[in-house]
Image (cartoon, rainbow, N blue to C red; front, side, top):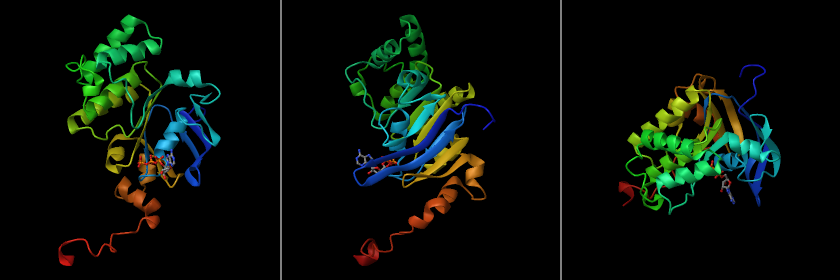
Length: 260
Ligand SMILES: Nc1ncnc2c1ncn2[C@@H]1O[C@H](COP(=O)(O)OP(=O)(O)OP(=O)(O)O)[C@@H](O)[C@H]1O
């Protein structure tokens, strides 16, 4: 990161546990602005819990988060006007059409009506939703839901966009469309932070990555730095956390043809 520049997101000592289960165990991260950032880790690593706390959806047990220099919990209005969020298990207003959902979101964000209409038309067009714009969201497919959720998250032109598993359940054509929109957005200086357990995807999209396992950050930095001499991010990741994940399935001696 350039010296003196404010990071897009600064996380210090973030901690969350659910009963005995420690989900996030003291995360410190500085995410540089203007980059495509991947938060990667296996199932249960703590990615969703971290992103929920960073975006003000879940209160941490301890630690702090700043976005563009504003504290998420003491200055929530300043933070929420600067961020867009596509959360896991996205909940949408099902009885609105895609177009109505965007109009409603835009008005909630305080944008003037004609500006909301202009932006909504462009987003619906770019995300291939123009034909379905008057269909109720309840009748949208999984991929269409992700796309309308993304449009709603982008409508107010946030500085930082957080996406939890944005490509899950999305077909390759829609994934390419989403990717194009996000690349254009980061090229203009905005920051995208997205979580995924698909290393190949992160490797192909991100310029900066944070690797998470068992609630902790195992590595963070520019993609090439984190990958090091490994052949791929996947290989680097297995080296970083592999020691704990050695079960190869040898114990499943009943599974397969010979055992029948
Ligand atoms: N509300 C909750 N109550 C109890 N345990 C929880 C809760 N939310 C998360 N956990 C636990 O915290 C840990 C981290 O979960 P989290 O969903 O953050 O992981 P993740 O990295 O997003 O995983 P995935 O890639 O599977 O979505 C898991 O062990 C999970 O079971």
